[in-house]
Image 1 (cartoon, chains in turn red, green):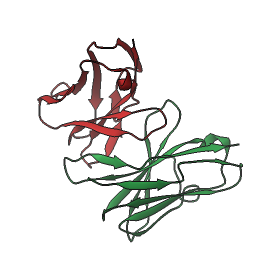
Image 2: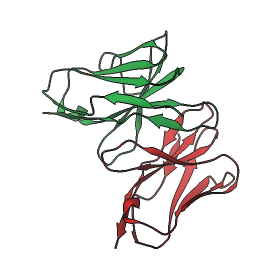
Image 3: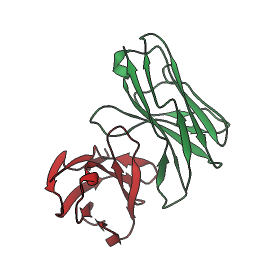
Amino acid sequence: GQNIDQPTEMTATEGAIVQINCTYQTSGFNGLFWYQQHAGEAPTFLSYNVLDGLEEKGRFSSFLSRSKGYSYLLLKELQMKDSASYLCAVKDSNYQLIWGAGTKLIIKP
Amino acid sequence: SAVISQKPSRDICQRGTSLTIQCQVDSQVTMMFWYRQQPGQSLTLIATANQGSEATYESGFVIDKFPISRPNLTFSTLTVSNMSPEDSSIYLCSVAGGEGTEAFFGQGTRLTVV
């Protein structure tokens, strides 16, 4: 079966750095996405990786290793507004998105 | 990118009734996707709606319970039929760009069945 694993919950301090990991086992791979979802709102797109390596976008970076079936989302200079759930999703061989359960990130002052 | 207008944003419904959720996209798209997200859970795909053909339902979801319409390339509806409290959830419509592009979501419909 297809499976995406990410931690259920993480806590970090304002101004610090946090890394949210995602491992996946899917039938084929056509890219990995990270989304941010605030409570009661729809997910919003953060990043996309299809090749190995690091993609940087402001305070957020995402890394992919296809051989290891592994990705992480790195958030720097954490702000209180970064408190949200972070969803990892993989497009499989049919270009269907397979979603992880999400990681709830709690930022403390 | 695509902008999706979804409504209603929330509703409280009596068990046994039905609710129809609408999604309007600002551009023509081939496929639209309907998801359910129960509290604290990930997104679960209900069905894929193609214009001009019947929707394709995922395992555990049936047309009688979740009928879908797709009359044109910019609009779709999902009906949650004969509702029970277990149907209380957030329902999201989504469209995907081409290869390598991300999914865009409507604002979501928060449904509470009492």
